[in-house]
Image 1 (cartoon, rainbow, N blue to C red):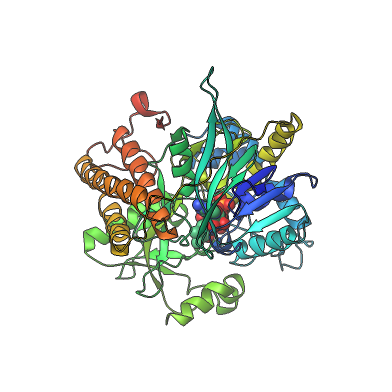
Image 2 (image 1 turned 135 degrees about the vertical axis):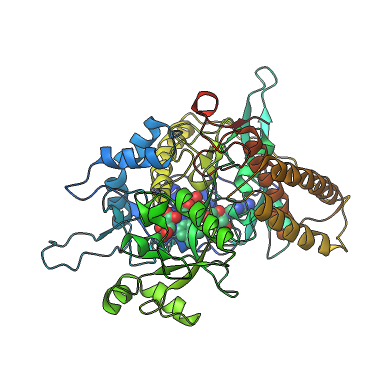
Length: 533
Ligand code: FAD
Ligand code: SIN
């Protein structure tokens, strides 16, 4: 395949809410590529359950949404970014509806055909717009349908972006984007793509942990690629654990939406008693860092393998109509949520840190943007509030689309890209190295860099990461790359950024809790952790 065959105005890496939102917001005369590692539907976006926060109720206000976000973020949210995002809640929902996303309406006869709003942790009002309990599926399928109909957008499914290619200005040393190298995983060929603009919309890095609510694609690729290319990365210590994933050997940490607690679900110990009121006055609706840590504490204190989420006090009709997908899935695992409490444990869920961007999604490299979960915008601070993520994806997709359109009007020049050279590599006869290292990494990240950390545990993880990094570098220069290998390489990079950031934060704040520094230290640490390559 010719190395320069694929030339675009914009290359969008990722087909979740951020990537599709950007593609659909760009003017139709621009030639756009969207790449996804698997099918275009497979993303965290597809699996989103609870919904999208937006101020729609007349008793609610953007000030209140802002206050709740900042409170959940434990002192590190950037107020200007919070303001920007929450002020665009309604416009984002309107945009999704214009793009044929079907949300749930309130079936109350007095509701006047209004969208139904549910509630989740940290929110002081009902402000979560949803499509039953499968909001992500509604968003993903509608936006995919729209993208497929656009003549200016070319889809590259089953294409794994390996690395970014940049140019460096000899005088200023400023970098600009030239394109990327891509592995076509079906044909097992590597080629380059060129564009004056690349947007990373690659999602988070939660697969770095053994137990995660995320799909397989969440391997921190955008964060690792941007870091290797020279971008700063911030706040990677703040990995969010969702408090309630189904505890069942076959369930693969299947998420049980926070909206269950929003609609009255209670967290119980094995003896049937509630424990959240002992930890926070908001009880089951406290922000996630607090609830996940409380569950972890109770499980360790009692030596039990799960706690329980109980909504059986609501009518079966209510539960089945609000949570139809969850009801069916739980039933398939042998649990009737209308009658029985569900065994739950926390699992890695969301990457609050990421590639540093400005208000337009621009990174440290000219022409390179990062949006959605892969980016660090300053919105989430030390802990993301529920249902603020898809909103952030959509707001920054729009922001970036405007900036990219302006940038392209200045006709930035296209660079040539050296062809991918694999003349000196051979096929690996040791695929076991990749699978072994995957398993090892995810296990020690879970054990040493999880909900409760200590300097000793972090240091242990750091030592192991440095051994893995050396093996990976060696493998990279000697063998043909595979998708599994590329993901491992990125996960190890993401793990290193998480551990290094966690070691720097010598206090406990939001999602970062360490036994060695259990208190908040505003004087020294009320600031972002910024790593520079
Ligand atoms: P994603 O949707 O994860 O998309 C990433 C895309 O990047 C994929 O297409 C992937 O193939 C592609 N990609 C990655 N690496 C590469 C590469 N190297 N080459 C090519 N393509 C690549 N948030 C909410 O706001 N509300 C919710 O109710 C909610 N519920 C959730 C429930 C679950 C189970 C999960 C996992 C998350 C939930 N979240 C929720 C979080 C939210 O879904 C995500 O943060 C958000 O959807 C991320 O969107 P994104 O576009 O940034 O990335
Ligand atoms: C959920 O439904 O609990 C997930 C919501 C989110 O992660 O924002």
